[in-house]
Image (spheres, rainbow, N blue to C red):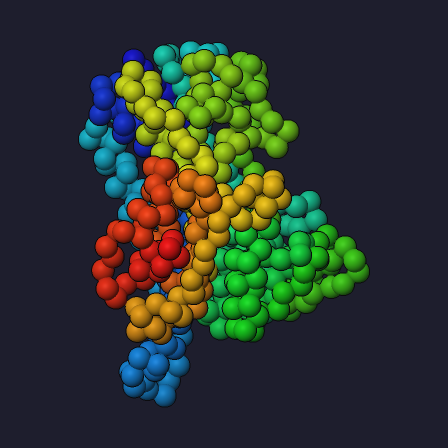
Length: 451
């Protein structure tokens, strides 16, 4: 069994590692850093910046914890931060490369395209091409930031998410266009570092598609920290000068700032792969539709990660890659339950959710039981001086099965795993209640919300 993988992000490298460990011959074609552009150039750097912003916030909370601080205010050293981000990404990529090499995975540095259901052509850096026969092909080429026609990235005044990590100085006033996950994370990052931030949101609230109660809780914190939010404002133009930028809104309003950051989604890297020529279906959006086993409509061709029509999450991509690595080597697998995939947003407070959303349930006329407790009643949250937010549990009123949940508050990304396990395993609320949590701990609120 020979599997050829195009793209070495979380999906590709996990599939390569799994298949190699299970005895397959594996060739991985990657043009850039192993680890994936979306992962190493978006996810890891942004979370490193979040960690720096959170450290600044922790210094602010220290006084409430009885710590006496000096007169000088903490500040961000952008050079050291950029250096740290570079060390993180290079280190992670190097670790992945060494691990795959130790497992016998053949690494080909270049671009790949599918020429038929069982052959891939790799174009190397020197322009030469190599045709590689394959029993199975995995396309895991990831995504790139979506850029509108009306804005040009200059990496100085106008930024995408990938130019925000190497700034020479902090913006005095940054206008962030886009209120999805990436947008609000950058709002938190720059606001926590002391920048004036204006968020241009095209919808009625930030995080469209999320629980409105969760979105409003985040909005309240952002506004209280000095962030200006323009709602129902769809950006349609952008001009730059030596002194700053001006963003045009389609209703005639304008927003002036020193910098602008575009965070309006991503585009799948499905072009130039030869997929359509071999019969692989591609949606108008550019995404490759797959079933719950990662299969495209062509039997020998699989797809995983951001290039597919599933949720663009590194954790999900890795799970897809692991599953496909087992499938192509003939091992049994359990199909991914996409309704039980946990998601997190690394703002302050953190936000995480999984399973059925309250607003969706009501819009569908589905009967659910909703219980909620605030972290202000949790002893550990009070001890840590982080009492903001809540835990919300959704369950079936007849069977008491846990259907989903949302968490707003400190360490939400870690706590959501308990609810995710309950959703995936079909546990009942009493199972969560009867689990004996450490006291004091934030996890006690999960049991309290389940009662």
